[in-house]
Image 1 (tube, each protein chain N blue to C red):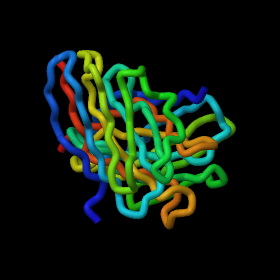
Image 2: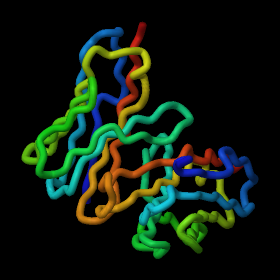
Image 3: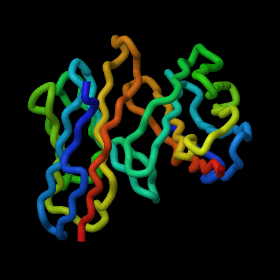
Image 4: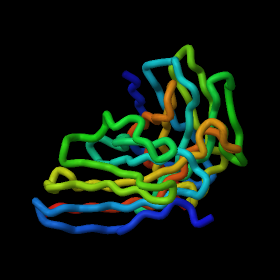
Length: 117
Length: 111
């Protein structure tokens, strides 16, 4: 398996623009997670899905952020409008869940480095 | 609310040294504890996972321990190598699938 795939790897945009980050989880994984990593706050969970359904979005900073998972092989994280304080590395991870052969381990993608000018 | 602390934030050691990375947490009601490695510009790679009923896990030169009563975990790296240079993160899982991460310890192993 290719692992978790994220695109783009780097994104530079101007304040006020819409940004869409994409993720393809590992096939067969039931859980998908979106994280944000900054120097100040470390790695924070934004939202996670189970079988394409959002379970916990309490980490989403505000209404400018939205996430969707239209099917088991694709998820998006959208920021509209973007602001300079959104600059961070955004990671997607997937997990087989507690019924999987390697229970609970989350597999991370390489991340998208977002810079909002 | 679970809080995870990793001290020190950075550590530099000569090659061949044995070392210990520390992780402390405030809520002992955990499902498991995981140690991850992050290389610059890369994602996280899971190293070891300790279930709450376990005391330690080993993989090669790595050994992780868990003491829930004291709210502590350690990651022991034996005979360190320059290739071990990376940031090591500790993460705890409670009753849901959510992981709470520490901010990590940046390890540099000097040849």
